[in-house]
Image 1: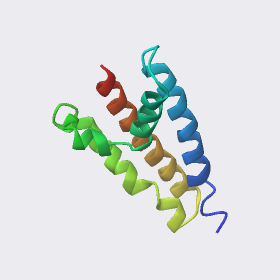
Image 2: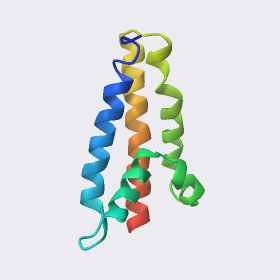
Image 3: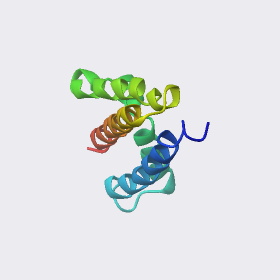
Image 4: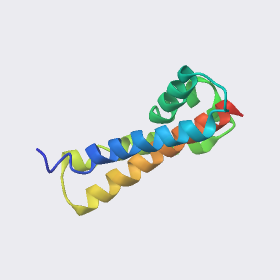
Length: 107
């Protein structure tokens, strides 16, 4: 069981830390802690809020975030090198679409 989550667990942890860094870099200075927390949640949420807010019609690249959601559990289903790579790509696509949503939301 530990081997199956050896990619997804650290990937989510790395994504959470990078979302903190992104929130610190995107949020304008002088804003409150809730703005930082909200930006972190937007990045962690991937394309979800972008689609709810209607950003997808202006940024069709958000659809790749949903592809990432399909790729992330690949390593948990069948643990090998190929599925580990696919899960890593999926996490990257998910968090990248969340980063794009956060950028658009603040600009």
